[in-house]
Image (cartoon, rainbow over all chains, first blue to last red; front, side, top):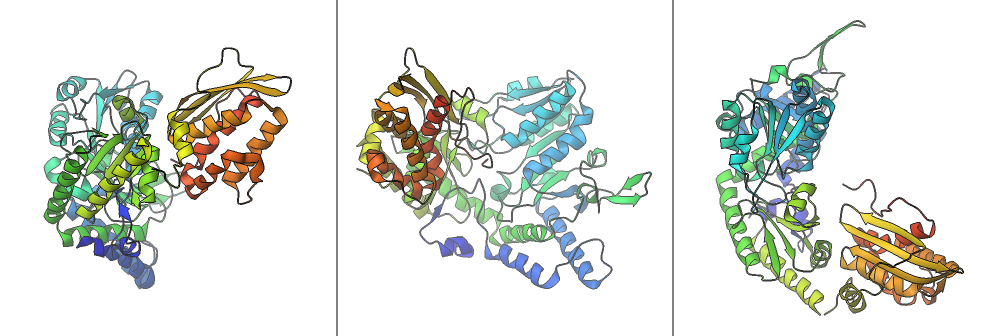
Amino acid sequence: MIKADIPLLRNRPDLVYLDSAATTQKPDAVIDAMTAMYTHQYATVHRGVYRLSAESTAAYAKARRDVAAFVNAKQDRNIVFTKGTTDGINLVARGFVRSLLQPGDTIVVSAIEHHANMVPWQMMAKEAQARVVYVPVDSYGHLDMVQFQAALTDRTRFVALTQVSNALGSVFPVDDCVRLAKSKHIPILIDGAQAIAHDGVDLHELDPDFYCFSGHKMYGPTGIGVCYMNDRVIDRVAPITFGGDMIERVTHEATTFAKPPIVFEAGTPAIVEAIGLGAAVAYIQSVGLPAIQAHERDLTNYAYTRLSQLDFLQLYGPKPAESPIISFNVRDVHPHDVGSILDQDGIAIRVGHHCSQPTMAHLQVVATARVSLAAYNTMNDIDRLCDSLHRVQEVFLT
Amino acid sequence: MSNKLYQRVLLDHNKNPRHFGKLDAPTHHAHGVNTLCGDDYHIHLVVTDGMVTDVGFYGEGCAISKSAASLMAMHIKGTSLDAVIRLKDAFIQLLTTDAPPPESELGHLMIFQNVKSFPMRVKCATLIWRALEAALQQSPTPVSTEDATHS
């Protein structure tokens, strides 16, 4: 039972944690690996001549190698450590896309991206007098593939799409999208933040130019993420943060830079967080992705079935759910009131706009309640959620 | 059925808000909006000879924000400006500090003290009072009770 692997859930046995799309709780394996690093091997990386620094450097490199293997990247150098998904997307926006843009060019995204995969493109477009083209989704949150194809014109310089909608849980056919973009020689970024903990990813198979994700949404620590860059683009991306570690030779007159991925990791990196991410990958592999997928599929099906039987709920997104994210509202009750009543029953869900206000506009609501599941959730968590939703109804009906 | 946070009085004001609607000729008005959670209200006042002689509010939001607005409107109508400002200060003190103001002044508004146990919801209860403050100061910019460090 995976719940037993999570110390926070052991320490708070009455908690029903249903906000894993925001951030996941951490297993012992990750916390212990980080503590062991601090207590046994910690020193700076890439610089010390002493043995301890060599060990730290080796551990940092191993974390990169383990992550590269997990996502099936061609080489370790394709894995750039970032602070998280947002940081990675901003690196691609500023370091790669900005210089491609001329006035009148376009960047194609979906209408329901997370703000992290929308605002950087708006900013780059504004600077370059280019335009962001939003591909619409249907009422279930499915990407309109006809409109997507039509949006890819000879003025399109870049495509950025989420793999799984954080607000609706709909899954985009990113393999088709990557194929279409590649056939037109348009580089494409996939935001894998909501996908990787549940389904992993095979980047050799999917073959996007960029793929970004966060450690903390896959049982790892905060402050670490990955921006994968494939060989078609990695040597054309310019660094956007300058300083130590990312240089090759510095004089007062000129500086030459290190090679990827180090060139994108200026300053002392998040060494222990990288080790924590490596441990999170190892944890996922030890439980087994197929086992996680099967368990989460059962949980999601059960949650969707139970929630769809509550006639006072309005469910949003795909029917049935396609990922462990279900968005809904209790009719005539503001989602923040739903969240507070559930909170009194020890149930943590997300309420609000989920960092995607255009998605809320698409649904014509101010906010929704969102349940998101992870491998450590149980059927009992879903039962307690449904009991508490009945209580919302009782409180507000009388 | 009632609940620690959602007491009967509060639920009643949420369902049937008093003084809900625009005034034809307000002397003072302001806009309070918490963009992150979507609470969004306008307040209209008629102030005559140092008295709040009429009050109206409109907009939308959660049960806490709406009932707070409704109960505030009931309490300030027919009250002198001095007393309104004292009430506003007492209410905000009740919600945001550990020093409870005298119960006699706040009366029915004391039911909102339970909101303090739900720190994420304090901003909902205080929004309309900050809007009232802005209206009395004739402030043209919308006010918010959301901390800028939230995201």
